[in-house]
Amino acid sequence: MEVAGAPIRVQSIALDADRKAVAVPPEYIQPPENRPSNGNATEHKIPMVDLDKDANPNLVRDEIGMACRDWGAFHVVNHGVSIELLDEIRRVGSFFFEELTMAEKLRYSCDPNSPASEGYGSRMLVASDDEVLDWRDYFDHHTFPISRRNPSRWPDFPPNYREVIAEYSNQMKLLAQKILGLISTSLGLSSSFIEEAMGELYQNITISYYPSCPQPELTLGLQSHSDMGFITLLIQDNVAGLQVSKDGEWVTVDPVSDAILVILGDQTEIITNGIYKSSQHRAITNADKARLSVATFHDPAKTMPVSPAFKPPRYRQVVYGDYVSSWYTKGPNGKRNIDALLI
Ligand SMILES: O=C(O)CCC(=O)C(=O)O
Ligand SMILES: [Fe+2]
Image (cartoon, rainbow, N blue to C red; front, side, top):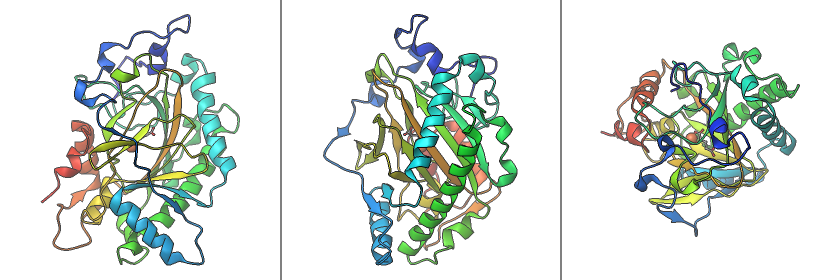
């Protein structure tokens, strides 16, 4: 959460007045056990699923099932979303962070007193002032249900910014529904099972911007966490930085410009009774280049109870809003919030 009255953005501390890198302030320095050098694996590659195996839909379903079981995160290609739209949201996103002045950007500041409020911020995953800060700025957009969508809260420069967000949001919703259907059938459930359990779909789009960092070995762009909802669809630019945890090691997700990364969230872990686990992931920084990613989250309504679809249940039922509140109060610390629901 933001600290009231102090809208500090990482971008404004990353470079001094002469645009030279400054030393990392102490509040961004990770303790040794959380630093990026810990536990990197290079030999693993995240699965890639081609969704266009229409002639053999069973094969797609089985590949998705395997990727969910083994990784909790996987790339999809031939997903039906045009590369032009993926490139355009990356372009308007970098335009906001790189071309607007800080004063212009701060006009869109999120509410410092409310977690995950819409707008421009820096501390979404930081629960208290005692915690190490993420080397990240972001812009969060509320996009579904349509009643939450208010483009006047989004930047209007470049001129097509709002249009691109709305179109991207619609396309991601369709893709999320398709993938949730495949995840359901991969477990022998009806294709609408997870979508029905989710009820009204809530979607947020977070564009993250990680300024280059003078001491990447001491910092994290985004601390280790799993996402709270059902699934996240993520694209990144050509600067690597996202890592997913696989068998206790960190695997860097190579950027693939036309692929979309599917990340299973905690509600999918609950509903599948842990057959599929949410993916623990983090972002690292680098000294030379800023990095941009676009994460689209798909969540249930805050009033929705979520419980396992299989017996005996290994997780306690939780009302999604209670889960979110406790998550924001304690902070993610890897997967501690979902682990706390284990029976
Ligand atoms: O920047 C990334 O690649 C990761 C973003 C992410 O994990 C999140 O916003 O939850
Ligand atoms: Fe995430």
